[in-house]
Length: 316
Image (cartoon, rainbow, N blue to C red; front, side):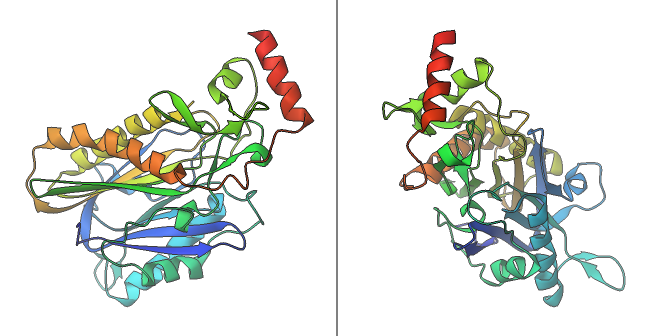
C-alpha cells in the first residue's frame, strides 16, 4: 500500500522523544494546513499553490519543540547523498518540510537532532504503518490542563483505507492540550479523583488556564491519487476537521496543530471521495494514538488536582 512512500522512525525511549520521516524520493505534490496558534514548522511557505516548487521529497514530524526542527537537516543530508531533490542547476536541493511537537517535559530535556533525522530516513521502509510510542509520538501526551504530571500518555497513530485502487493513510502524532474523545466520550485525558476523567473543555470554559506552548498535534495525509497543490492543501485543511472531532478542546492558543498532505500521483480519483474520507481517517488515527497506551504516566490526582476539581464544579 502507498508504495511510493517510505516511513521511518527514530525513537529515544530513554529521553522520551523521537522523529518520524515520510519519504517520497520521486517527489509528491504537497500541501499543509496550520491551525494551531503556537506552531513549530519548517518550509511550509513552499507548499502554497503559488510557489514555484511543485514536489516534496520528505515530511518530518518530530518531538523536541523548535529544537527538533534540526532533525530535518539530517533528512536533507540523507536525500542529498542519494541525489534526490529540486534541480537548482549545478546541485539538487531536497525539499524537506516538517513540524515539531512539544515533549521537552515528558522525561528529560532532549530533542531529535540531525543524526536522529538521518537515522529515521535511513530506517524508512514501505508499508511501515506501525503505531504507538514510537517516532514523533514517543513523548506525546494529552490532557495537559494541569501540566505534564496529570497528563495521559498518547503516541503515534495511523489509519488507512483502500477504495477502488485509491489509497489513503493518515499519520498523527497526538500531543494535545485537550482530551481525546470518541463520539463525545473521553477516552484519554486528565484522571479525576473518582477515577473518571476531568473534562478539559469544562475546565477551560470555567476559566482554568492552559500551559502555553507545551502541546501540538501534527500529522500527514498520504495518498496515491493525482492531485494539484490546491487539492493537496485542501486535504491538509480537512484533516483538521477530523482532529476537531477527536480532540476537545482543539486548536487552542496553546496548541500548534499542523497537518501535511502528500500525493504521489499514480491514480486519478474523484476528489470529493478524498474530502469525505480524510477527516474520518484523521479521527481514527488520533484514536489509534491513545488506544492501548499505558496509564503508568497518568498519576493519580494530588491535593492540587482535588482542589481544582472541586472549585471547578462549585463554579458550575
